[in-house]
Image (cartoon, rainbow, N blue to C red; front, side, top):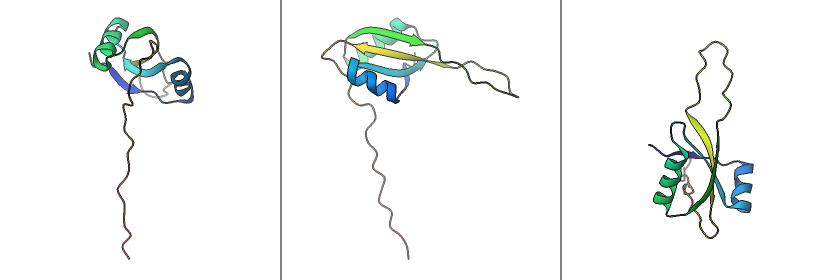
Length: 100
């Protein structure tokens, strides 16, 4: 199991994080809810209270064969007092000097 593919950062996911302590992420479609729950609790050292998941609708294709998505969206609710530290640190680009 590869676990979490990426963290979803949208207006709704940020609102859920601030208001309800819910984290939104995309996970592998072959993973079960109990596997993801066990992986999150083990890796981050938190207690998961509830998990909701749904398969995202596929994109329509015109000329290519239709393929299913290889991930699904998972909303993980943590117990009060627990949080996951930021997964991505801020990136500061290097200074570029102009040549004249």
